Amino acid sequence: MAQARAQALVPWLADALGDVRAGHAGLMAARLGGEGLLGRGGLKLTSAAFDHGEELDPSFTADEEDAVAPPLDWSAPPPGAQELVLVVEDPDAPGSKPFCHWLVWGLAPQRGKLMEGEAPPRVGKNSFGNSEWLLPDPPTGADPHDYVFQLFALDLPLALMPGATREELESAMQGHVIALALLTGTYAREEGGDYDWDEDDDAD
Image (cartoon, rainbow, N blue to C red; front, side, top):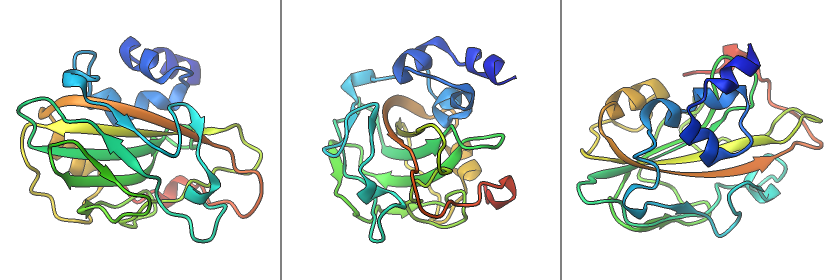
């Protein structure tokens, strides 16, 4: 079943992500994106803290007490963009869908950035039901998990209020994505307390 899900991932997304596994097929980018949208207009998402496919520093994870979200930079979106949306998901978490770590919208449709630990304009509920950056904390001893940062450019401003769920955000974005950029960080939890990955805790 897992192999079939991985094979079902569209080729353009598999090429962009590299080492894909079953859960990657459940990413929001797989449903709302497309080959013609990836990097359209030169849209690119980067971080001064890690390169695509590299490990996240512990200062952005549950391994450090005062951990915060990593810094992010993005280029100008293509003409017609009215708003930018950032979604961060862990496709390697157990369950029927990726674990949601961050939902951010209300970002201006222009070149911009989020500084390390900066509070975004509007934040939705992560998989623990909190409107904040959910610190990566995969099960101890597991293979490294991917944390896929997905930046969407929309052709309309969203009317969603802070605290919206992933489903509500995706529904509002449906049919309005005009460009997409991806950035993946990885992390392996080596020691310390794990989150409970029970699906019942997923508040989406």
